[in-house]
Image 1 (cartoon, helix red, strand yellow):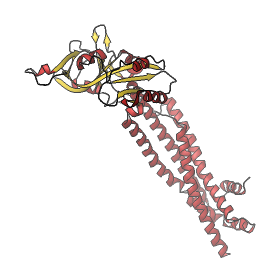
Image 2 (image 1 turned 180 degrees about the vertical axis):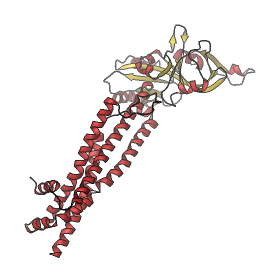
Image 3 (image 1 turned 45 degrees about the horizontal axis):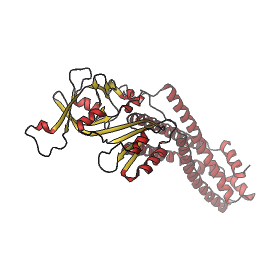
Image 4 (image 1 turned 120 degrees about the vertical axis):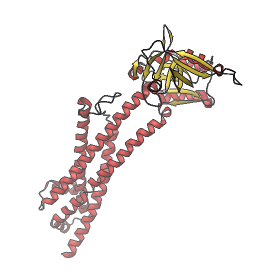
Length: 410
């Protein structure tokens, strides 16, 4: 066994002549223990919230979106897009025609995005999970229906149970160069019943989803579309599929994955998590550097032992390694126990949901969500190891100075 490691292990469990050394060492271990456990628990909670938010967003956000690089619309009836729609790797291939329009219900009106989608859009079985009123139906035997976001519903006070009042949609009529005597002639004016209300997030809740045929009549667009939304079969890598499509389409089209479609969301989630990590790491550093006081007192307590080791031929490097290993063992013991306790707490929270949130939260369960990632455990372990090494190295250098002072006194 390594001599320095062996002696450090003996010092770790040996009885100290001064009880204050044991107290400071215990405080150091507890500080690292609590800091490590808190850090892994907080990171896991952020992972849980991230999973919940992304799950809601992914319900209405496709894996890939194809849009023109210039302009608003393009022709989907080319040979390439026909082959693409028949690709067996694709689960749903949805043609989308969207544009802002004026929405009116009773005496209230608001501007919203009218999104016309083809029938394959309904292959998404998760749409019911975001429907808070009515049903997610855009076509039935009675004709086209609209499913609107909660932001529109809250502003217009739409009642899905009222079959006699429909949503009125206005869009500027194409080809009108001068205003008509009657301003109403400048707009296409259509009515559509509202079958359901969905809720995801403010940016999405200002959308009215309608059948593609309705959007074509409203926007007077017979053939062209705004985009194509693609969801892939299970097991198909979206990034690889995206690269293939982008290469085949060339610079005339842009293919976006979910991260590119929601850059702001992903940036916010990542920034918040790293901000919390940095703040808790500073607290953890304070706990780790308590080891300096513990090792300094241990050096004073073991000066005679060190003198004996020096007389037996132990060099300064060996003495430094002893206290370096001593400090590392104290802090890493706290880190390992903290990670184990944090892991156990996260498992219990996942299973039993001990810690509750506000009862008013309707989007997710009342228990705080937990998402365990091995990378977070590795991150905390590496963080503690680095700062533990720095603190222990500083303490070992101080020990050598004390040894030199002892030799001068002798």
